[in-house]
Image 1 (tube, rainbow, N blue to C red):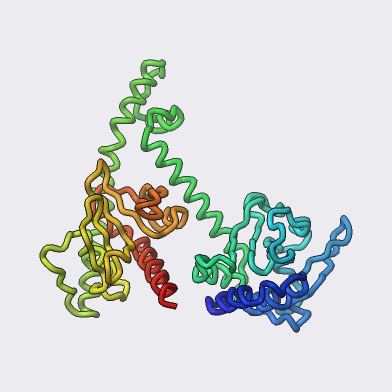
Image 2 (tube, rainbow, N blue to C red; image 1 turned 90 degrees about the vertical axis):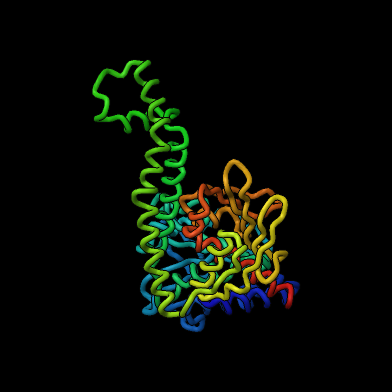
Length: 378
């Protein structure tokens, strides 16, 4: 689905909301154009069927909309249409269809403005309680570009529900593994199972209580040098080689790098270079020192997209990116909600060199800053 399609639907919703008082009005004004944006032809009953009987063994079950493959043989997606502004929390009766139709793994619940996509991630054939994806066209801050990317995978010609559900499952598992490793590495001695696994094959003796306490203490002491060793010996060396090769390649393609003023802080030079490599204009990136932080902005420091804190116990930067999204873009760094007066998300780092690994997050924050500027000018 294209971003333009979602943007047009959002404008239509804003313009006509007072007239969309029935489910039928919502269907024709918002839902069918949405389905058309997924590549389906609402006028072709092989692909799109309204009020379709799912014919379950337990009885009659009607889907407000059912999407089929182009041949009209395989059910792909069922849609539960709610009144505009209606309850989106109540469990959909269409959940019963999963497990009865081969290949059906997705159910969509929508009121035209809000769209929730559910799957059977946790147990095949059983609808999850939480949606895989949610979009609110009435939200002016909705990330339509991200939504279009997700919905594109539901397109008529690229429909692969198993791949979509599998990718989301990988993302959730990856996040859980990162959280578990982060917890264990912060205080390994507090997790007896982790200490037992860590010392397996190292200490062959009997594990009395004093021995276990001793191993826990040693595990706490071993974590920092182990992590630093991995970073120095493997990660940073490999990162430097990749960055060096990338700089040489970009330099050949785009010419000499933009020279920064001599007094420019190193963190600003790094962010300028990240922007330049992404095809942006590094001359737009400006900065200003304040008492608490360094503001890095788009053409003016007051239109900031990064704030750099270098005076505390740990270095940190704050961005305009919500913490949930920032965790994906900045893994495996520690990400938390920023204090409201300083930003939206805060990322804790140990060395300014690590900014190179946060390029995607920095560019995303810059994009949000640029969008806010465009909205202000509109």
